[in-house]
Image 1: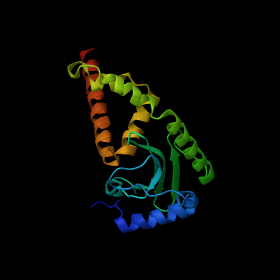
Image 2: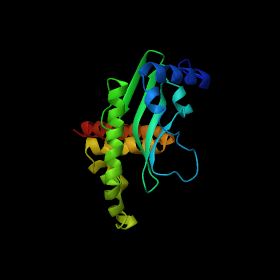
Image 3: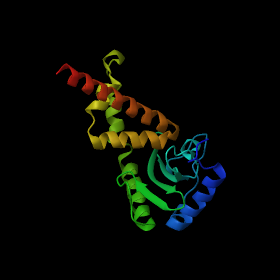
Image 4: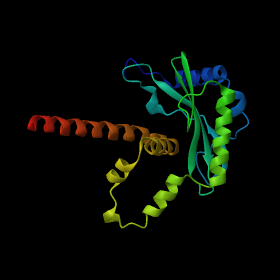
Length: 196
């Protein structure tokens, strides 16, 4: 346990404070909670689940995801539409797939609904369509690293946000992968400089 860790009880108190203070509670009340198991009908849902891995901030107090709005598509995939995060009873962030920070609850809710409508009309994200086409490629010809390197910043951000929204437990693995990749790049750069 580190100095910058909060308990599950404190996280629940922080959650209550953030939902009330931000003004999003009135919008989220209209949504059903995301079921934890079973087949889920397409629609828009809210999850108040607190990821226990987020309770330890390491070098500072943690910012905790206190509510996440998901769209469940016809194919059963969950897509994160928006999130509410809180930091130490001092700051609240409202974010959507397109905007890292939204000014107020009403504007945030408008973006969440617009995004849900776009997804509902399209049936799925274009990135998923692209990945379905990739399935035709032979497994031995597929390089995840090359595919990831070919993505521009926006596509990479969308992919990471999608994966984190669908499987929040993967967040730690993604961060470790980025950290390892950065270390490998630094080592290659250091080796190239030494060769000069």
